Image 1 (cartoon, rainbow, N blue to C red):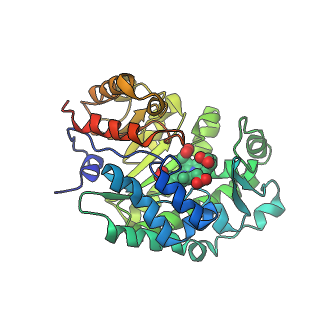
Image 2 (tube, rainbow, N blue to C red):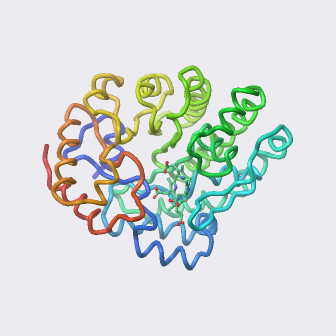
Length: 343
Ligand code: CP3
């Protein structure tokens, strides 16, 4: 049987829809926490193929999702460029901030593929290990989102540092973005080469820029990445996730060249159906907080989503990642709820 996830990305409808969840591998699973403790640091987990393969497969074994997403992180790219990146318990990612010309000049694309070689080995092994129904997704952060972490140095609320950097010195900021575009193309190409069957580009901080700046720093870089990938792999599906983009989902879907868009929790499905390019597959968009409450309320929310997507190819997913407080049993209930449904 063909892989349902890939069929939908190629424009077919499947009933029930294929399902996978952003952050389906992670701390809500006891088997993840156990392996994570063995690996030591989070980056050690990402760079040790035996471990990374195992944690990628854990949620597939438990739930039989239609797609596995490579276990890695969007911040391996700045790590590969030579920035100091670490993950601190209770804080999240911490990076040595890049805020001036000197810091930008210290970054280099030369070592990226060598440093990230274990990631591509993970992809190749996964491709052999996954069963015939499970598709393999590779991914990267979009340049704007990765730059947010590189410049802010950690998770930010107001994005003052990156915005002041790019409003004050668009030329220097543009140099950093050019470097990220090149590194992202190389990183995604290497994943495709190693066997990824679809790619997702995470633009998690798409929702913080005014329109003009959104066009320059979100749309344009992603367009360059997608067109470079298309030149080499014309049939490889690419999903874009411009979280928080609001009305800018429309030019994002129409102009970047992506094959499909992943909708965040706040996007109205009827609005999306009326405004996104005809026939474009959509992915989403259950609020991950429903996985904390579960029960009939969650089942009803799932019904509404599946019911609202009958006119388009649809991949069931969340509007953002699985929260670490989620009970693994609630995820089972979610999968049962979708699979027992015919719309
Ligand atoms: O299962 C999967 O989805 C695959 C793996 C994956 C991770 N991160 C693993 C991870 C993917 C696709 C990502 C993407 C990612 N990473 C994004 C884009 C998606 C989004 O959530 O908006 C972003 C912004 C990051 C950066 C990042 N990595 C942050 C902000 C954090 C800390 C937050 C947290 O939950 O602790 C991470 C760490 C991280 N990446 C974890 C996992 C499983 C938790 C690490 C741990 O075990 O301590």
